[in-house]
Image (cartoon, rainbow, N blue to C red):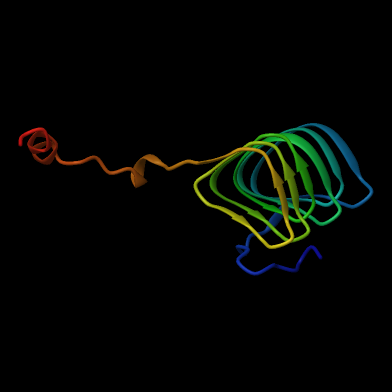
Length: 135
C-alpha cells in the first residue's frame, strides 16, 4: 500500500515509514512526506505531508503542512494546508486547518477552526472604510 495513492493525494516521495507492527514513542521532525502504518506516541512536526495509514494508531500533537488520515489519531492537529479524513479514518482532538475534508463513514470528535494564511486575508481600502461611517 506504500505506493498506492488515494484520490486527491499529492505525488510525493515518502522519506520515512513506520510499518505495521512497529511502535515508536518520541518526537518526529521531518521534511517531505512521512507515512505511519504502525503505532506512534509523542509529537510530530514537519514541512510536508503526513499519511496515517489504515490500522495505524497515533497519539500525538501534530504540526505539519497536510495530514491524510485512514487510521486513528488522538491529539491536536495544526496544518498549514489541509486535513483529509478518509472513510476508515478516526480523529479525536481539536483541529486547526484552512481546508478540512471528511469522507462519508469517517469519524471526527473535537473542535475545528478553519484558519487562513495572511495572503488569503484582504483588508478593505481605507477610503471605503472611512465612507462606511457616513450616512
